[in-house]
Length: 486
Image (cartoon, helix red, strand yellow):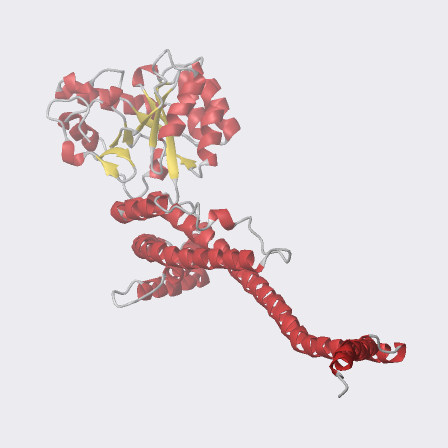
């Protein structure tokens, strides 16, 4: 039997080698496809990648776009909101500033403090304690800008909103107190204006009564209409506003002024003052004084001493009267008359009357006691002689050698008021020098310059002691001479 084992064993390696070669060939064939197949595989992979990328792009791109749109929309909204808040802030800040400023002026005003110092002080304190440094003042220069981030715009918008709310609350708080104070002030004004209207109504009634037969009928009729309308406004049940009261006051004043302007001068209705000169006539100075008064076109009242009315001075008295001046008496000479006996006092009055009349001037009806010193006996003597006693309420102090012409004028102008009797002296050259300034100053203040008799029309009465129009001393007669209390 032949032994094939060795052959069989020998054949196995060969077979293994062959199998290996076959596998290697096969592998090579599979790993190294042909160029065409390899290109197809690449194209397939690229196509798959493109498809995947497209799918991803289709999914991601809208998401990214939506995100950006949301970001843009959020920024636009934030910018719009910020701009709107800033615009509201600017408008409110203007109103706020005006409101606080007006309230402060109201509280600081003398009128408000007079009406209610408590309310005025409380309002001032409330305003003083307002601190706008962070909430308002810091934002006045802030501005919403497109290049700001959304967060920055939102934050600024919120600050504007907080400031707006703060300003509204503060305005409401301050305005409430200001309105209360304003109502108090308006109420006081209303009362004051009603008082003014009542005062003007009293004057208008006087004008109407005194204008009878002295003013045109149509003007008086117009005044009567305004008088009735003013009465209606002042009725207790009337609820007239300040504006209505002012309208009634203006109409009544205009109507009354029209009637007064159409009447002869009446010192009850117009502002009048009287210049008076004592202790003349003086041969050297009185002619200068008369020339100054003539140049100024002003009438005056001269109280003369009987002892000086003699010789050429009698002509001075005649010249005074011819120029429209009034002649009064100071009795015979400058002496405090309450020291005289009754007979001596009577003789001094009569002797002075006689020399004045002898100069061609009417017997005086006005008497001024030297130094203004008087007693009941002096007044009774004046009454018996038919003379009113004329003192003064404005002293020019030209009797003081230290006063200059300017001082004399200032003394008169600083003290003069409607109805005043102004005491000056004849024989003083500084007084003559002061006349132009006195006259122009009084006229600039609206005064009419008249004689004492014109000033005291309807009031003159023998024995009555006058300081000014409407101001007599009959309730304070001294018992032993000297100047009376007033």
